[in-house]
Image (cartoon, rainbow, N blue to C red):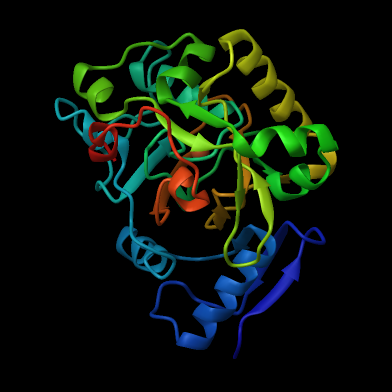
Length: 307
Ligand SMILES: [Fe+2]
């Protein structure tokens, strides 16, 4: 039986049924899933029962797997294999983290609007988040449609933004939450990187904003003006008409297009309830400036090697 697609919103989010992601997929189903993904940007697969290996295997249909940044901290143990990002409130012993733990301070940044890995030279193309344990109250994920937000920009911003290059860094978004406890190896592996602010999605020709709380600077613009512009764009793009809120059910797998969406986790009582989510992340094909053919002023070979 072919997959079925149930739109949740007209153009942004859809549920996909009649598919078991635990098994290899036939080519027609893969093509239909990809088409739905390009059409909607956020797709939900309910009631999947996946091992970690099956989760990663499905993600590989979309593209190559990006390793977790947890691997940049060789002195600390990871709870999950490096192909999966740990979006939980658990420590390496599977206990709820401590109030003052470093992990908790770092993950608090996930409550800011962002797109995954825009702070890497080669950013993410897609994220696939799987719910293994959910909080009974709160802990939703909100998604903002940056294609619709781009379409609704006024003409002066549509003229201004395409030539601009934003500088993204994990440290910039964490500055917003007051977190600065990065190791030397993390600072070395995660230097600020350039990304365009408007991009075209090749599969459907849609133009999209490409913005995130990871932006700390815009080339050629004073920092206060740059941050004011970023805040203005994030406020514009996260108006209710552009946002879908996903209320997690156990064993949902949600896949979103990082090239044309932002997301954030909503609050929950993380010192009381376990919320155990695993994310497989698929790499984009190139840095966004390269994809858009925008020259990066002062770009060195070094920054390319950092990807
Ligand atoms: Fe995220």
